[in-house]
Image (cartoon, rainbow, N blue to C red):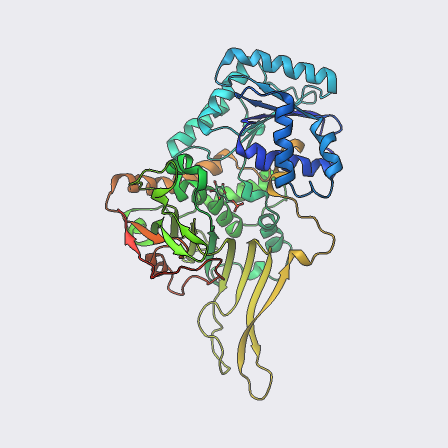
Length: 509
Ligand code: BG6
């Protein structure tokens, strides 16, 4: 069923997110005929631009970044005919009268029935201002069964616990929680949603998915790129706020949560929140011994000379921002007591991938020659991206005489599913918000739980100048100290780049 007719109003329409992600995803939805019959995208931004110029720019974005733009290029023009643009100063309350008038005229022309979905693709310091300004002209009021008003908010949602609480309060002063859709694009990824299906639709895995059988869990989100042009944002954020507090915490929640009683938004989100609330709080000792921060330094590699983070555009030459973080954490509940979760993320690492590995305990007795005896003889590998799929590692009798064991792997790859289109994360999430399905969005109590967990770390970094920031050369797997967190060692991956000099690991501050 298609969503109800409506106008999607994108604030921050002249920005990168709109250009690279939102419009390409909307075009892909349009190509699959899943958008409403009567549907208009209204781009709103400060930059003065004609509708035609805006459409030209969006066309370029669609051609470069959509999945289906090449296959259905004849649909690009008809899709663009559904796009409009309005230039207003979004920080000025009085300008919202123009927005309201524009929306009314769109409703009259295109029969969009007064249903508005607002998308905040702006810098976060604009979120509350825009919400209050929408309220000033009553654009936030919805009337059940007549028309809806919803608002999608991009990450980062807050800067720390107190700012996240404050933002929640401010937004709740305008919109109810049911109208608020906080996006974490990781939850829009097929492979991330599949964690739930894999765990809760198979009798095979769930019985062993606990402390009795699992030795430890490892999560890696590695990126080969540096911060590029995002230095200004990243300086305020770093890997902890950019990746750990949201994407990685939500992966932990999905891997560790209890089965929901029903597969519907409320039940699902309840279980996610319970896990996040059970994270063992961080204190001085656990921060010092279980967390490693790093920042990439320059290196000569087969991919060229890579800049140090401190040499990137808009980055302070003595920046203390981490571009890598690794941590060992525990979930204090019955299922996971004493099972370590090792998670790491970083920029300028040697591979581009996100993977979750479940390491199972060894058998109680080793019967066979060559049998793997430690933990990790059996692994379940959830490949989130790229080469999306699932792998399983186990021991096999080596063919021939005797009973020698060798490790082999069984693999499922999404690419082997015939005629299957894998939608992008933004396609999935935009469509869910249009349908009013909040299941894959982050509820306020989940946001608060993740910040509550991370906050002591942020405060510790701020107040303890001798909590080290290690320098790791670009194209290495982060500081060597991160390897000491995990006795069994992190899993190894094929490298996209190699370093052409003796790597120099340093202490930056
Ligand atoms: C974003 C971060 O939320 O996620 C980026 O701001 C990061 O810094 C990106 O590169 C990673 O997303 P993905 O989908 O490429 O893994």
